[in-house]
Image 1 (cartoon, rainbow, N blue to C red):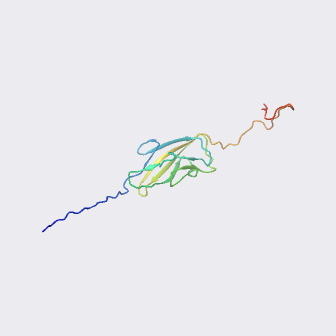
Image 2 (spheres, rainbow, N blue to C red):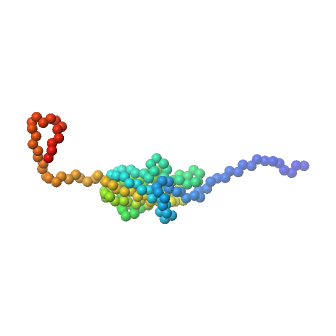
Image 3 (cartoon, one colour):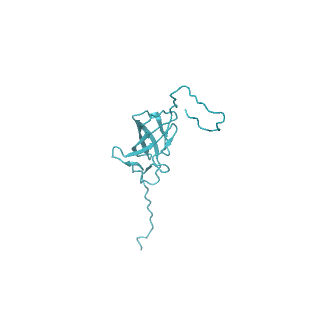
Length: 157
């Protein structure tokens, strides 16, 4: 009598969420500072900025990972100056934030895959907010022009 019979056995190995996300983009950092994405742009209140526009900012080698982002804190600044889109990682400047010219704000960003988290740093350099009122040195200006002066002719002071 036959004591064995051939059979096909399929084994499906499922990936477990065991890898910590890493930030894409930016420059190489240290273990304590894994990402320093230097973003240097002229920002105005309400402007959106992104470290890697159009691409995911975090990745890991686990199959099917999705990520959320949160702004942990702003080093040397008020936490309410910036916001982050939890789904895309896009950083925005709060409306009416009153950013200081020639100031760099360091944002501590946390990327999570639901189980594992990675912290990274993004530097936002304010190169000109354009939010100041224009000033004039004199209270009143006057100039004389002839009656035959063409329309849109510049008048010098």
